[in-house]
Image 1 (cartoon, helix red, strand yellow):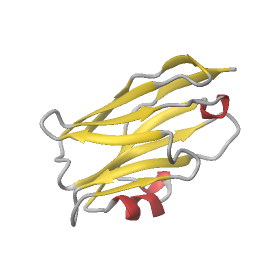
Image 2 (cartoon, one colour):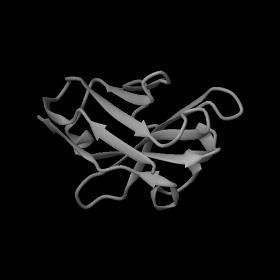
Image 3 (cartoon, one colour):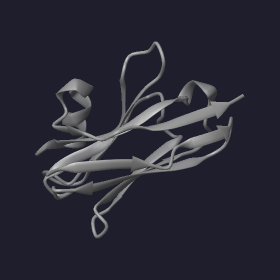
Image 4 (cartoon, one colour):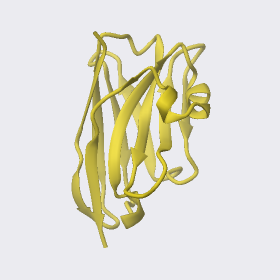
Length: 129
């Protein structure tokens, strides 16, 4: 059984930082793209960042987070991280990790969040002004 468990959310002031973790079980990080999307109240789901070793190492960042968020993975721990800095109130959302089999990061970025193979429960990030 594949499980993705997101953690690390919380309340932070604007300009602050948080690190989200996605603990993955039931699949290898070498066989799937893993990444993060978010959903804010009243807004569409937004794919943020993905990482993959399929066909070589690849990463993707949405324009809204490029330069502020960094995705990384620890294959030994089967965990993917999202380091978030320079947080803004607009970053307030529930953050989810997800995976898709045999995809590069860019290919997963082209998919809609409803098309991912697996999705974990979200973790709430609240950025106060």
